[in-house]
Amino acid sequence: MRAGYWLRDARRHLLTWRNCSYLQNISTLPGRTQMWRNDKIKSQRLTTSSGHGCLSRDSQVRRACIQHNVELIPCTRHHSTFRTDVHNAGLASKRLPAIKVNTHSSLLIRGFSHYSRCMTACVLSKKPVTEEVADLSRDFHTSSRVLALPIPLLLILLKPLKKLIAMILGRSIRKWWQSLPHDKQELFKGTLIKNKWRILLAICSLSGLIALYFWTHLDKSPITGRSRLLMFSKRQFLQLAEFEYQSVLESYKDKFLPATDPVYQTIHFVFNQLVEKNNDIPGVSETKWNINIVEDPEINAFVLPNGQVFVLTGLFKAVADTDQLACILGHEMAHCLLAHGAEHASIIQLLDFVSLVFLTLTWAVFPRDSLALLGQWIQSKLIQYMFDRPYSRKLEIEADEIGLRLAAKACVDVRASSVYWQQLELVKIVSGASQIPEWFSTHPSNERRVEHLDKLIPEAIKLRENCSCPILPSVDPRLVFKHSVQEMLKLSKTWEEAINTDSGTKQLPQYHEPRPVIMERIPAVVSVQALQNTPNSQK
Image 1 (cartoon, rainbow, N blue to C red):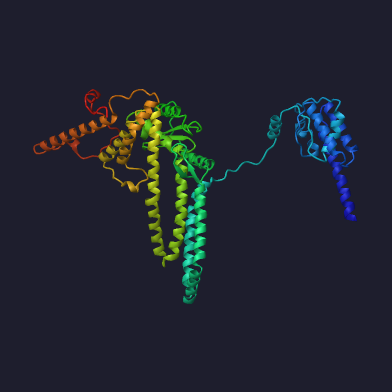
Image 2 (cartoon, rainbow, N blue to C red):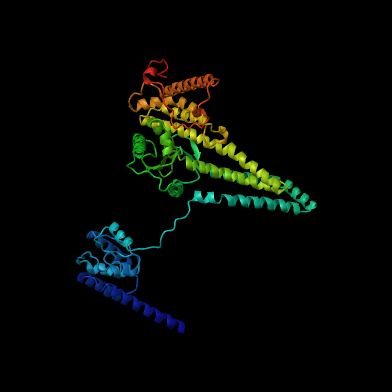
């Protein structure tokens, strides 16, 4: 009984405090609004709490609102039915909309008293819903956002942990098996043989579910039409690209060229030509491209999935003209448009999953830890050189093909694309750099790239003609490079013969001492007029 009296008194105090605070909050309203609200509160006190006639009053209120073109906004609390005029006591000083009291005010007041109990209220508003939401959002504050790690980056960071768990699991299985007596081992083998079909069915079911998962993540490229595995969404990989972008900015800070630099302006002009002429390609117009030129002697350029283009000045010095530069930028642009980064990361995840299974079996089967470590090393190298590196070279070849198309549509002399890789190969030979076999590298060899591009150039020239581009020069840059190399070999041979002839009578001059050769460009030593008369100039 005492608990019942206590609850009754608490409810009475609560209602009294709510009405008092409510009256204090509306004390600063204009006169007509204040009068309207006071009448509403009085009607609410006089109205009985019974729900009879709810439907009739609901329909009357709605008809009155619709008849006078008044906007209806659903409200969820009793004292927020007039939230369009006053959001809270702190906003009471703002300019409030004028409310006209019409002949239907008594009907609306009766409706409000019922709506505060039965259903959401009908609110008179002179402002659009969008402005109403904007006003509310301006004064609504939350705690600061905390960015979570992207899923691709999280999987990369957890890769060592997954390998460690697989090693521990395999080793635990081996130790458990070795600790079993011989009779229990035989009993366990017998149990496995007896339930072999059930075990095989479970393995097949699990393999089918895994295959179904990867099959549902197959995607068709809108540019090439090739099916590829994409385990990450575009949003997830853009988050990873943002992390990578910040990392690159940190590594190259204080090395970026300003926009007024001639190198920056040249690269910016060439890249803009590629973008403008290929707006019909899926992904070109949707990507926000941004050029970043880094003062670095390394010959490299790359484009992040979020459209951030990084070109090192070493590449600008290595190309002979803007045609070669456009072909290289088209190649890097193709990597971004084809989502090669997300595709390669998906393949890495698939290979990691397969390797974890074999890693667990390796540590469970091999009798000693040393043999298990050796088997793990052999397994990682086999996966790397038989699956990972070949797939990476496949993506590079595809980027060469699409990049050549992008350059052709931008009216670039696509014949210069193969010349660039011939120049790099010649520089490598002259400088005495070590030759790495192709199957060890993530990129195709220069010879293979030259051969593949020469096969694609005729088709790219036809595409260039279909885009109403100017006629190509009569002199093929590939022929210029070929004759230049021949002339250089002749001059080198003549110089060696002269040195050998004079070596018997004169002392070898000091400037003939062996020294490393550094070549940044391959000069064209054959004149254009001489090449125009050759029969192969049109090839």
